[in-house]
Length: 138
Image (cartoon, rainbow, N blue to C red):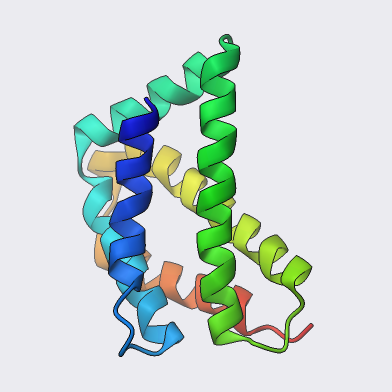
């Protein structure tokens, strides 16, 4: 579980480690990678099963808490790159909102998979929302 979770996180980190890209473009690349992974049924099943296991097993809860912390810190770094005037705490808060939105999109996609008319429109809207979370003044 820990290894699979780390792979999920590493997919995003690899996307964002292109130093030549400005932070705004890194965020776009991350959103694109996120949407590319939405259709991975095995990965989606793993995430949902991990969440369910964490409701009943302490070891799973600890693993997911640690991964969530890393995931949020990863997004906080992106937020800080886009809006360097924000405090560390504010970057973490906004990163938590982005991570929560991503979790919600996973649920939405799994439940509405066949009913989503245009996934590209949803992807574009996600870029707008996540960028707005990063850009909003303090």
